[in-house]
Image (cartoon, rainbow, N blue to C red; front, side, top):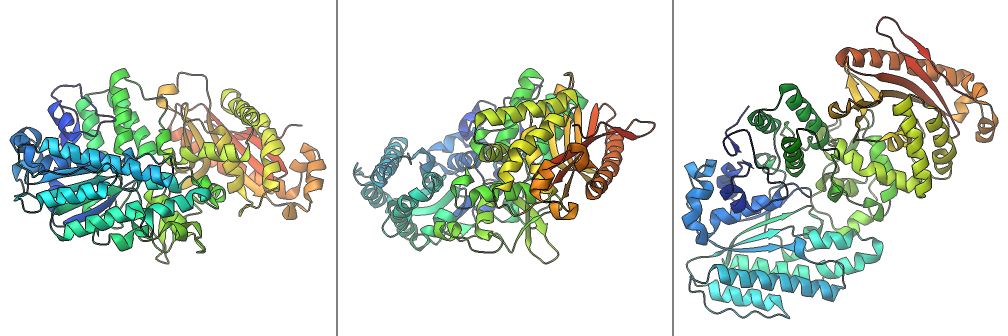
Length: 612
């Protein structure tokens, strides 16, 4: 593994900068830093660049690194900040040669009217110019007039002052689309408010028209912009169409994000117990890995912010964090037209046998095009989810289409609760479902959960038009009720000897001291037509009568055989398991049969069954 990129204090203790994005503070205070400065020379090949990554993926730290590298006022600090890093061995000629003007659009309050948003944006830009004047007060910059009511005038005054100086401005814009995305995701009722910011003479469009003009006059000699998606840029594109999109390029796949070898190097330096370190890596791999941002790169990257969150707690307590999940990563796509259906579709399509495929990731689509997406594969909506990190690249299909998938368990976790709340809006009902689920992994009893699904979930399914009526729908229902990533590693379609079990719940290594069962479930679906029944007839029959229907019996036997095979392989691989295995068969969206499948190490058979 490559340990050269890992920079940390000597000894076993490492300061992990979780929540920090100040490069100078991180380096001078000897925090852990994963060196990405070798990319600076490549980045210099373009003057104006747009770099997109999901939220909380290290973009702000990247900008801070560039800010410190190019800032003319930090020339005396160059050796302290960069001397020990890759770029310090061979700096580019442009280091410490620019005035830095930095805007952070995540600071803009998006909750008010268009006029209030405009003023918030003006205030932010004016404050950044004031800071600019303080930072460069010793550089004899001519007077600049700051207009509180019109930051565009302030920008022009700054440009006039700097235009004939020997030093140009490097403009850094962080989260260019942040406040616009907040308005956009507020639902259809706020789309006009969003469009008034980005269309015609909207303030955001006007600002970028000014940036374009100043870039062509060399006042802004270089510009680096970060954001999440190209939607906002597409909507203002006529005002700013000179930037280079670098977010799909191979060289930048891990510009933000950690590789597995880098995380292994960190764990090695921490000198934790080998088994504990291996378990930590496995947990992080399941929850935080899996992101690919380039077609021709095969090694995925980990979400850097969440890895630092994990490592900081792991080092402090020697234990894994109970909550692997960050609410700030969730995006409420239910506000988008068709969003509720899309959430369920994603959960179902993400299983091994149902890949998500579109012709290609769209790089230029505005809000209207996305919300009125009439493409058969919903390519604009799917592309939008890719940019937000909900989906990631997964190669191409035999037909050459782009394949996507949920990158890890974290992204799946983000929408499990959404589905639960969508299908069971009453908190009392959700609590009943969770209580029934506890009986499965605490007592090894599936009965209460199956009855709950029949009584509550199936009533919802019967009254709604969902695209699939098969075991995937049933699996989604059970997954949302059973999901507990504090106690378990939740994995649908776990690969076992090149085959896939429908749902496994493996007790987390740090939770194995509790009285819990590991769970494996195989799901089957029998249509009412195959059973020769109507829904009303199915609901009127006894449990034993349902279980004795030939089509149901065949499905149960097939599921038992699969569960036996997977259970034996799983126990062979993980001998410490306290495994309970089940087959669950749905008859339409009306009834549920279940059977426990007992697989002793020496022989196998089944017990339990469908209970009256």
